[in-house]
Image (cartoon, rainbow, N blue to C red):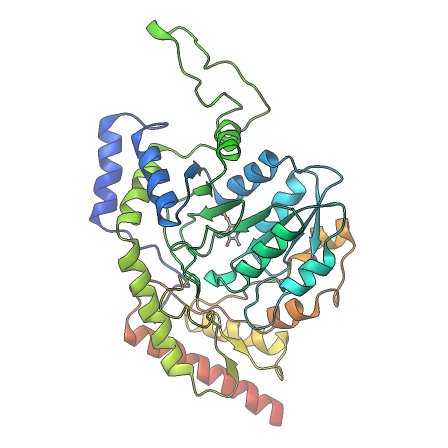
Length: 391
Ligand SMILES: *Cc1c(COP(=O)(O)O)cnc(C)c1O
């Protein structure tokens, strides 16, 4: 049996040694690895600050809080994303205002975003879907023109560079990366806020650390000092030294890992290029060599619907090949239908795309035999659908 997973973290002895060193050293939280990891990620996207947090979601939550977004405010965002990019808006009591996507890039359509801005708009939360940086520059300009902050959910785009040479994480007032095990870099669980804004960074550092002042410390001789002074309602969104050490070891290998992912993506592209029933993932034109691949998600052509797509995914799984329907639309999730009154047809581009996408196995060490087997099995499943149709 094949058993090819949808994704797989790339952990070497370097990572294991780095984590062991932390455990042997005894300092398990708030230490030098956190600082180093922050520096490395910030530097990678040309930002002044990195603020390590316990997850991508925690990072997005902290950024919206630090920007003062709350009840009565609207934040424009995409319905085609992982749920966290909209949930964080609800978490601060604001209203997510969904806008449809561009059917090729699957990112927010800038023209529709501009048309959706009202006097209640307090932010635009854009996602680099599947690592694609398309439209981020245009969204940044719209945000600047209307004087609302762009919040960049770059959780899927670490290390990516746009066609114009801009790093993922460099577009928004703040950007947020995520380090869940399926991401390009993992810390098990983790995230990182990046920004050039000193005050915003400071507020995020305080929010992640129980609302303490950023210079809080235990007093000399271990008396309480300012450590037990809490200036604002804060959270425990800290990243442990264990996780940060893993992140540092992963960041040291980032270029090699991105290269490995590019090789796998290109191998898929080569094999699937001539298939009439598939639309291949789009890369921002000009960013082919610099995009950071998060997943590999081709789309069935418009003659297919979700019934066929779901059957193809089930068929792949029966052959022990990981596959998934990235992403179901956020506005059609039960919670969002219930609370925001959304219904099918609200965002047709996002919905049409989301019914036909298939995430295929994608990880750094995927070899040609595995890629070949995935493509072969996918072809068999699509051919079955064609037979069913003619029957
Ligand atoms: C992974 C991801 C996040 C963050 O997820 P966490 O599990 O909280 O780290 C947020 N937004 C998008 C689009 C993601 O893919």
